[in-house]
Image (cartoon, rainbow, N blue to C red):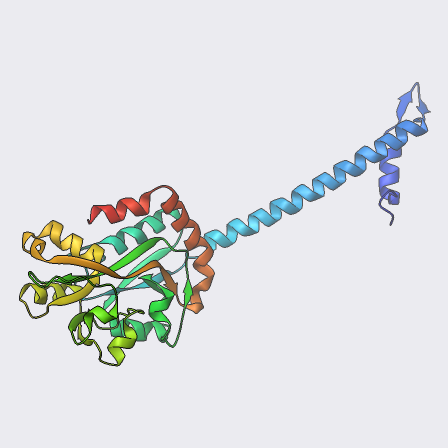
Length: 293
């Protein structure tokens, strides 16, 4: 049917809009009939467009509400103690990661459960599809993994630094400045600029289970230098005076950090990204990190 033609039902409807006067039907002039015809066509089109948009909006809202409403998503958190990201204090657990996920829950219908395990096992469980989310990572750190994962928007910056025991500070601009040195590093952590030197043993890498242990060993002079997160050493120096004697050196790695989501759960990424962007724009992420420095 041509866009300016009406069905028989529409034609009858318009002709019913005639005026009755003393029992006689007053037929509408052609120009008025045509005007009513155009107005009716416009009204029908507007109504159909509004209905379609309403249905589409309803579907989007339904999907947004539906994601995360019926299940909890598992989040890997490393143990032992990993301050300031995860802090175990007797029966209480706190830290940056817990605060960030609490904020996401407030902005969405997503719910999370935390799974605490050593990093090597946690990464294996992610590959196996038993863990849904790994927080605070960069794709370069996980490029060797079996399951690469899907990444959220970047929500913070990670700075890894070399920290020295008292009296051993030196200027480190690259791997060449640490040749034949022993460096303490967390098992499973990757430093792209230094990985080749570690693999060739031009720099001797000694693995440990946590940054907490590395800093404790640094205090006892078991290492001259270790690689740890800047947020980590600042937290220890803020909370415990004995760590203030350790000397913070150069940045050895600086990356945007994101949430790594298992491909099986990539449907939550739009909702997760919206929440993270809102928290960034409102300064909530910055306030969380500032609490622990």
